[in-house]
Image 1 (cartoon, rainbow, N blue to C red):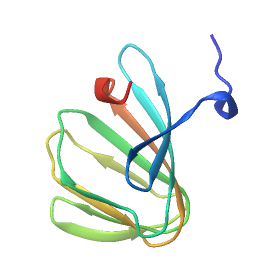
Image 2: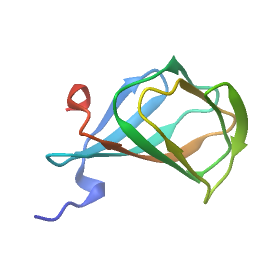
Image 3: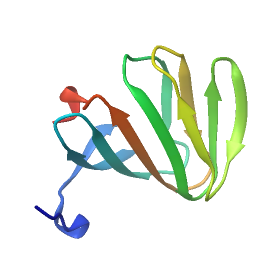
Image 4: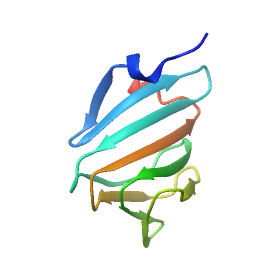
Length: 105
């Protein structure tokens, strides 16, 4: 099976976060188009997550430490660690989650 990203429908998962979501049995891959100023409130989850900034500048707080991330930077996010973020500019992000995010299906 192959997937053409341009044919995957986008879903607005939270205000300003438009995701193209691809699921396997054990993982979810999310390509986000994020509006400038959009925020994801502090939260944690059982999933391991890897975030990569593809375009723009994204302010990200992980376990109380805030940094600004730019294209090419990758952030591993362990299970159950609080994190939040804000798009300082329009952004494109990629997230990988394991196990799959059932609530995103």
